[in-house]
Structures are given as C-alpha cells and as structure tokens.
Length: 327
Length: 304
Image (cartoon, rainbow over all chains, first blue to last red; front, side, top):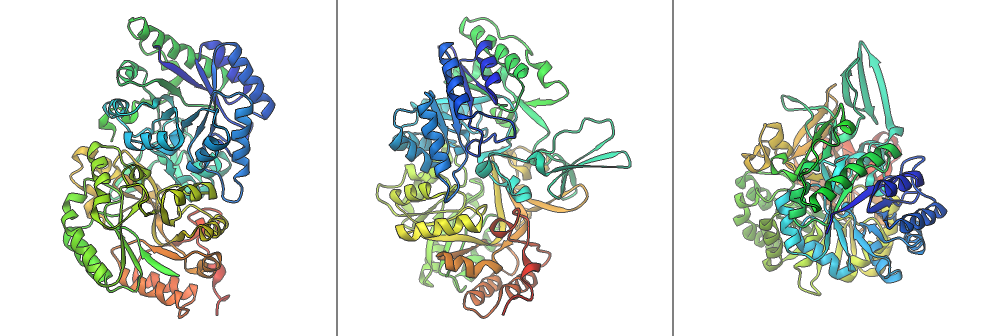
C-alpha cells in the first residue's frame, strides 16, 4: 500500500491547499492551548474545523485533530471540549499525548480514533503495546530519537501503525519530555503549546554584531550580513568547558526524503511533515514532492532526487536520529 | 512533611557512589530512591553495589525504591526495565514503559519525569496502582495545589522537587560525547568527570544550563526553601532532594531543620549556599514568571 502523507495545516486555506496538492491526510488543531502549535493567528475555530473536515472528506482525504498538549490541572474542561468537538466535527482521529485525556476520549468518545502523539515520546514496542491495550490506540507518532533499524524493530513487535516525521523542524530532545522553554520563558510545549516563543525574543545590535536573546539569555550572536537563525533554545550557540559552538544541535531542519524507501521497508505506515506555521505555498510544494516520492516508490520507480532543496535553501538539513551516528 | 532523596542523576565513580549511600543511611530522611535514571551505559559500573546499598538503607529504617530509566529505547534497556520488577523493592516509574512489565495490581511510585500535569492522569495512574507521585518540576504552585488535593482524596502521596539541578530534557543524543567529538556508542564515558553535570554558559559567559550525558539540566539548583508552608498547606507530603557532590548530607540536615521549624526560608537558602559553593538557586517554576527565577530577595525580612 502506498505510504500515507500526513500534512500540516495551520489555516483552512492551508488545509484546502494540502488536500488539492495530494495529501492523503491533514492534521490541524483548535485555536487554543490544546495543541502544540498554539501560535497567534494560527489554527481553526469550531466552524472552520467542521468545514475543513467536510472539504477533506469530499476530496477523499482524512483529517486528524491534534489535541496534544497536557491539560492544565483545574482546567481540563478546555481539553475535554476539544476532544468532544473533534468527534462532533467528524475528525478521522484525535492525536493525543496525555494518559488522562486518552482515558477521557476512550470512555466518552470511543468512536473517535486515537493516535498517540509524538509528545508522548513512546520509544519502544512495550510501551506502544501498553498504550494499545489501555486506550486502543490505532497509530503512534514516533519520537525523533530512533534510528531506522530501531523503527523496524518496533514495527515487528506491534500491530499499532507507526507514523514518522520526515520533513521540517526538528526537536533534539525527546518530545513531551522537555521543559527548557519554560525554564527560560515560562511558556512550554507541554503546557502552552509553544517553544521559544517570539514574545520572549529580543534582538540587540552592537558593533556590527546581532545578538538574539530568549528571555535574558543570548542564544545566537551573528556578524552583520550573516544569516541570523531564529533563537530556538536547543539550537543556540553556547560554551561548555573549553569548547564553544552548537552544543546541542546545529540550526538544521529535518529532511529524510532519501530515507523513504528504508522507512517503507521498516514497516512505517505514514510520513509526517512538520510545519503548521508554514504558508500555503510551502505546504503545496512539500506535499507535491512527497506525494511524488511515495507514488514513485509504490510504482517501483526511482526516487526523485533533491526535490526539496529549494525549500531548505540557506539552511542546513539533517536526517536526525534516523542515522545512528547522529547520537 | 517527609524528605525523599531522589536517584543520583550523574555518573559517579563506584567508590563515591557506595560511600554516598552509606552516608545517606544516616541522613534525616524517610525515603531514598536509587538506581540509574539517565544512561543505561553507566549501570554496569556500579550495578553490583545496588543490593548492598538497598540493604544498608533499609536496615537504617529508610523506605527504598529503585528508579527506571528516563527514556527506554534499546532492547537491552527494555530488558533492564522489565527486570526491575524482580528486584523485590518498590519501583519508581520514570518512563511509562515500566508499566508494561509490572505485575497486575503491583504498587509503584511515579517519578518527576512522568508527565503528571492534571487530575485525569493522576486518577489514571492511581487506578494502575500508583501510591506515590513526585510531580514534574515544571508545575506551578497552583497546579501543585490542585493535584495534591485530588491525590489526597485518592490516597496517593504527592512529592515536589525540593532541591537540585532540575532535569529539563532528555534526548537520544549524548551531549557530553558530542562535546568531545564522539558518538554516543563510543562516548568513552565523557560524563564521568562532571559529578554535578557540566555547566553550559551563553557566549557572554552567563551560566545557563548543564549537560549530563543525554540529559539537559538547569544551571541553577532548584530550592523550595520559601514554599514549604504553602506546599504543606496544599497537602504535599514530601520534598525531593536530588543528590549533588557538594555538602549533600548537610543540605539534608538543613531541610530537616526547616521542616521542623528551626530554620526559616532565608536561613535554609543561606545554609545551602554555604554547603554548596558557587551554586545559584531558583524556585521560578513554583512561583516565578519562569523556571530560572529566584524569589529569595522578596522573602528577606518577611520571615520570623
């Protein structure tokens, strides 16, 4: 079976663009703290979600609703409402990370399929099978800490479908297990759906150097004229011992297009593209290229080469943990 | 309120590890969690000493639990995790993978690296057999209060991070190895020279984070010196003190004095900074705008 392309949509327009460009599946979230891309001006209100799902279904595509932050104590009703509304809107599945919310969804909306979010960082077959028994999850999005052989091993030991990230932003840390951002800004992926938020970024220019600060910490310092990457905390330039550099990760994004045949062989069901904050034209181009790649693979034709070079222009790319040497 | 010594997060030489737990048998704490939390490659160096340490601590009247790894990926780590259940002591779950191998109905505790952010998850864990939960350090006082009250209804003891560098993230990549230009598989145990982790500073030299193998921590040492009364009021039943190489036995004594009312928050904070030199304190997750903040100045002069 052809590998499923799972594409991000931050807006109804991006959803329609993704469906038209050939995405098998689109994922999106409500415009609040219930999803891990809680950015200003992004995401769907209730009516938009219903219309978006109806549009996708008319065109034979599926919609997954990400409700993948961790509900706040004393305020779980916001997350419960998101699950209810996703079910009522006809979503094909909800992408969930929190065990309490999975339990709520399984009990109150059993007909809504449940996918385990990357935010749950389920990194081996034992825990994936445990989640299947406990909450009857249909699919798991694997954390970006696994090599391709390890993914193959997981697929050999579970009936739960696996979905892996192939393109876009890259977390260096196990997702859902990182509170670096709230240590520095008070806002975190787990609690607020944001990481290194722009509201806490300040630029300071002096003597031909541009410093990018997050909270009160300098994350990057670049010469005037050099490209200045966004100050994502874990991709900053720091010093430790007598060394200086990108101690955690270079400012690189993930591109695993060339690994698609190996991921298929490893038993992966779906390929996920990161970037609900991205534009319609970006989404269209990425989807077209990945769709062409999986269709070529299915037809036994060679993979298109370097198809996404233009989208990552000026930026380093990596295959991340899929190759063991990354560790 | 009780005191719990959390699992040592660092890679200590076997002799240092052994003498630390001998010393802790005499510390004024109720409970000790030990074992390997961060990296499965470290365990062979001191694993054989664990049964003796458990026996010594139990003979001294401590409750003892064994931690799981924080992130279980490899086959060897899955086996290690499954074998924990055979050790005959309570398990502290720091990756839910452990739940897959615990016998049905077994009682366990939950460590700070499991995401317990809300009542729903707390209730679910209680149903699975959790008797005790150390909440994630990221939580605010407000969330801690809500969860401690719900936990009390369920008969689950709640613990809060009281002292030590805060575990902020775990990765598939080893940063100590990367710093030395090596991969994780050929790390040559680069982390063993840093018994409290290695400070990471900004390019301007401002202390920021600490690396500890695959783990990233805060540079600051969390210290709940000023929140004891509020935590007790909310029904929190224990504070977790995380082991460090400097003055730790004395720090346990100071926290005990604080719980007994013999020290105020400022006194405890000063005592900690005398016992562990060059340490910056923080309590911002509990009551600041962000984790790195320290409320110290706002408390001075307001205490008995």
